[in-house]
Image (cartoon, rainbow, N blue to C red; front, top):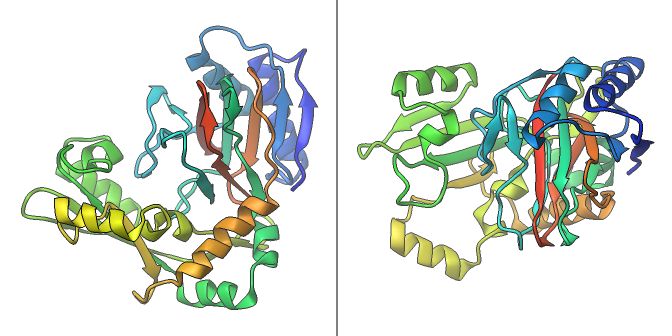
Length: 309
């Protein structure tokens, strides 16, 4: 995986954004490779860095509505990159790949690098598609993916509440978000929200038309993050149908665990894993490029914004 590394010593936030905008335009409304800008001269408070950079890039930043990743909102369309426990590896994926519309561009900025680990691995979705066994690719291409999610109405169970995920306390507003995103849903008697998304396993890049590996099946399957014992304990505590999210082929058939592990491991093996330093900026094409997070120790503060150019 090639990364375009740029010395940003003489660049302000707005200048760094303009550099991303120029690369995006020159490369045909896309980024062929992720751009890593080192040592940008950020101005003001960290929460404002990405806002200024987005203005320089011409990015129409979007709110993270409908996403299942735990993160904190710090300013308009500026979020922490993820709140997953630091000992876990976050497998590689395109942001919001389970939605109908995904943001074109992701921009990360490093406020505080971790003492060890914590890299944001980056992988090309075309390279992963070519490297995967043809049988796995064929199955995902022909059968698609079915994402299931249970969003509780309060915080007594693990996982985001539906109010947190859709940033509203109104059922009507929540249903409006679901309709725009082509999501099937059911309100449980206790006020929980159960939703189902049917999505393709592969997509074509909007500009090049090239096929891309484009799903988060390995991340959504609870067998990948919980042992059988842990799942049994969870079901005894909260009930057999209370797993926050799960995944299958589009026809409802279970995906082989071995296949999901192959996808996860191969993406990590193909990925570049640049070390973060304070002030670094990474911009990536959210269709072409997948990202994740390695385990870490120490304080890690990486902020992210996303949207369309």
